[in-house]
Length: 197
Image (cartoon, rainbow, N blue to C red; front, side):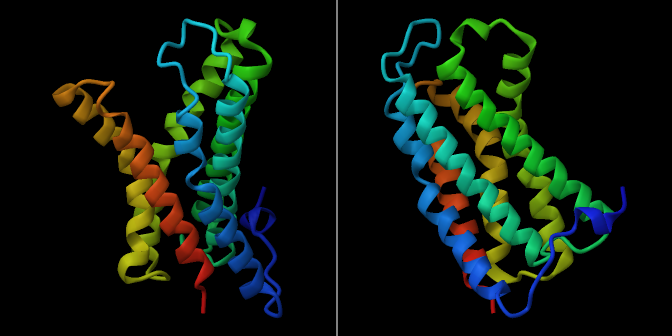
C-alpha cells in the first residue's frame, strides 16, 4: 500500500470549512470523557448500573479525538510521506479499537476475560501515549508553530503523569490528572485544527 492510498483528498475550495467542522467536533467532544467518568463506580469488578452512560460518553470522546486526527491529517501537520501516513493509520486504528472497548464494556460484559476485550482495553492507553509520537512529528514538521505544538503532548503525557501522580497521592486522588489532561489537550487540539488559515 502506497502513502498516496492513505492520504486524504483535500479540495482547496472546502478544506478550511471542513477542517473547522472537524476541529469543532473535537472541541465539543473533548469533555465527554470527563462526563463519562462521573458514571464510573470506581470498582470494575462490580456491576455498574450506569455503564451505558459511561460507555456512550467514551464513544463520543473518541469520535472527537478521531475528528481532530483527521483534521490534522488533512493539514499534513505530521508531513506528507509514508511515515506520516502510517502514523495516521495506526492512530485511527487505535482510536477505533478503543471505541470498541467502550461498546464491549456495555454490550458484552461477559467478554471481560476474552482476548478481544484485553486488546481493545489496551488500545485506550496506547492511542493516548501514541500522541507523544504524533506531537514529535508535529513539532518536527513545522506546519504548526507556537502553542499549537503543545496539545498533542498534553494528550500523550496525561497517562504517564497519571501514573506518576498515583504513586505520590494515590490512584483515587489522581484520576483528574488523566481526565483533565486529555480533556484540555483534545479541546486545544480541536481548536488548533479549527483555526486553519
